[in-house]
Image (cartoon, rainbow, N blue to C red; front, side):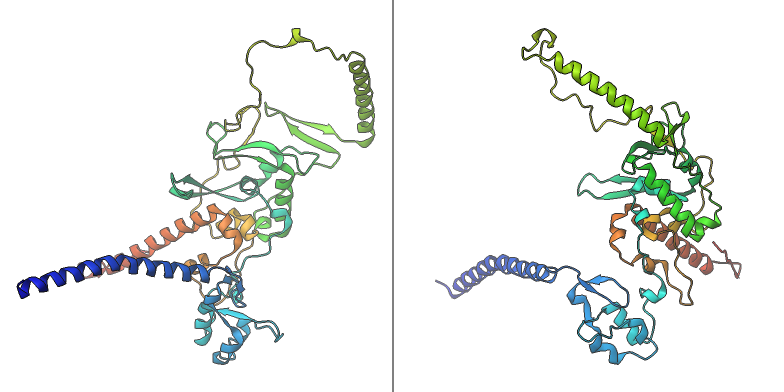
Length: 400
């Protein structure tokens, strides 16, 4: 065998061995990386940053007592250290970076970007939240064909809502747990509804009353609620006609006694006529459906569901023109309160990064912020492009 042939054969064998071992090495590296990732997130984000009050993983935080010596005395109060030495205080890396520079972290509670505690009256479902809100952000949210995620199509239209008409139109129910079928529409003449869901009228009325009594923004709008006295209950029939029912205990007791007497007489008559012999003549012939309940997926009948359009006839407002639109539209998230004004300017993109468990549950809030960030970014780019444009040695400036 020639020396050249032996060398080429040896190189070919080495290449085959390398190609066979390379996939195994690559796969083992992927397994190692995935195993390290699962080990990191095994315990979940359970470490609370004392400065921004957000939950982080162990890898993203440090013990505050080990790095407080690098902070200046002016920013130490922002760290909110615990005086109890037996309890560990943690700081996230973002807050540590700003505190070392002697600056106030943008996500700090001192900036007022935290979420207010949610009262019991504002524990509402999405449609109940829309009924008690002063602003309604209309948007087309569609479910993607795969993954179970949602997408936004078109713009977000911010429209004022008349809460007083909603409270007046809702029927007063005796039980707080009683629900009614309701359709939320843009206009009453439309057949299509934006949202349709079973709501609790008493929960909506209580939430609206709490917001009017406790939130300055609702008081500034001049909202007045026409709450009916407890002795009367207002209902609406399928034709939209309102009527009242007296809930006087004395009258109610007489009515209950009459119903009980009729019920007892009917029970005695049915017991006397009962027989063990089955009556086959009354049985229907042929195969019958075992469940006679209607289809749960079909649309709710308009004659049964209450249709409301509190935004009908209102003029839409711009997202940046209406400064407090986000707080007035998402009352369950912001509790109707605005961020307090301070000297440090915080970008809206930084405010959007503030986390809270309620944020992940509100799909409308996520898409609202996305659309507002897109509009803000376009405005900034247009302003920058116009300032750079020159014509006849003159600068063209335009404020948007």
